Image (cartoon, rainbow, N blue to C red; front, side):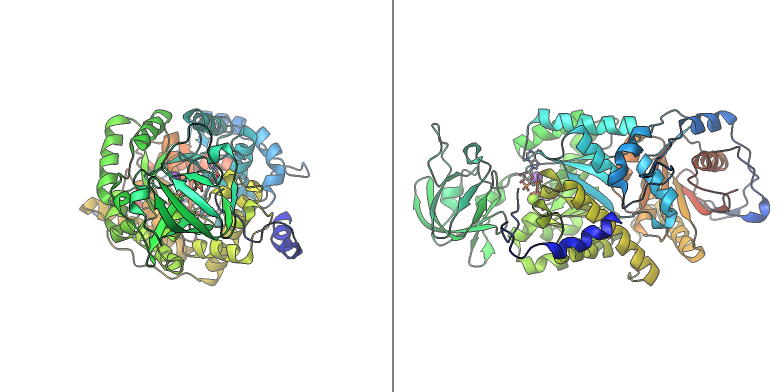
Length: 607
Ligand SMILES: Nc1ncnc2c1ncn2[C@@H]1O[C@H](COP(=O)(O)OP(=O)(O)O)[C@@H](O)[C@H]1O
Ligand SMILES: C=C(OP(=O)(O)O)C(=O)O
Ligand SMILES: [K+]
Ligand SMILES: [Mg+2]
């Protein structure tokens, strides 16, 4: 297959290639009632009594008609229909997406063509559980590129407010929304704030500048009206010249270029290049003294700057699903933002993701994660603030803590950095991706690889195929360590939900069921199931498209939009008939269903 070929052709990379050795960073049929012999109701109510389910009633024929008439026909490379391999999805995306239809009426179910194809081809148990995030930049902002990314498995599109204008970001959001509406995808939008980081200016419009060994460069807080002199870099932080000392090490982009401070002249800081490399516009700057990162007055800068507040208002107005906050230092800022969001965005529920990328965030890790709706291991800046060799253990700790606290966690930055320039990843990068998948992080994120790299689709394909392969490997080999999941709920009802989900997940593993079904109004039960990381996929049914998108960040959840009632019996009947109409399930499949309206566990074969 194309994908396995691609992973192995890396050997063909010429040892004499002329590219730089180090990649630069920056940059349904009628429903038939169930036969009682094939069904085992295990309904658990809050008082924990066992109730047998009554026999089911058939769903209305209008459900069936609307569903089957809108069922998309998928075409594979050979045009024989019905198959779209995970590995060949990219090659066939045009045919798949051109025939896929989004369905939004109340009697139908909404799922996208890619999920549908994956379920049909590989069966439930082989669907990808790890979610994929792509940063959108100049190389991926067009409708066709965004569509190719969605077909390639993008679950969340990230926009980085460090770059671009509101109009640019608005256009990207509109295109993603159009894609969701027209093709039935549930791609969520994550807006990432700039934060009060120290970074360089725009290089006077140049795409990059090369700093050579021993060259003297001036870093200055001055703004140059009539063009920037040669070897001069503008710095955005007013206190820069006062805070640095002669002898400090100035680190660009976490170590891609290094300078030593040799002289201070008013607002100008003269520096000698000690590690040559490419300077990119708005690159991040840190300065180090005696082996640790210096945090002078910049430590006092607000986590959410006035510019960030304007960007947050923009995110609210555009209805983004997630806002990721850069350089979080404490839980207060998250709590404050959450109350601001609650007051401003009445209907929508925007998730706040805390980016763990500073020493302060590590000191207050648990309270920050508890206050947030998720966390990101932002290894780019984190690796510029703590010694690099500490990053892997910190990553593992954050991933574990997030799962224990039931918060989705993203592993970000440099996963496939070399693919910014090369069509194949390094073995080390594949091992890094595998490790994040083995740790069972909720999501993996591409930054420069998808924003401005030369091979965004190939990078996404690598993430997808490595994820699927590693997940299957540890399911087959039982490679993963079971994790102790503490009670996290604050009420007895919460504890019941947790017990139901962990029991349902355990039953699912022991019985080898095909899928877990969860009917959820708030997403809570879905996330509790995801937290258990069961062996089978979790079909999460929710009645709103916004919640469907938001669930798309979490491990193992396949979100569907479906109108449902408080009557589990009729929900299940409706779901079975709709899914059967689309050949997504078949008679005899074993399913365990839970819901957050009725605290119950039902085990049943699809009639
Ligand atoms: N909206 C955008 N417009 C232009 N370039 C972008 C945009 N988003 C990302 N990029 C480019 O992709 C690179 C990698 O993205 P990311 O890691 O999110 O940013 P950063 O390098 O600032 O941390 C950026 O350095 C920038 O060159
Ligand atoms: C994801 C990160 O943040 P940004 O790309 O915004 O610097 C990071 O630092 O790893
Ligand atoms: K950012
Ligand atoms: Mg960062």
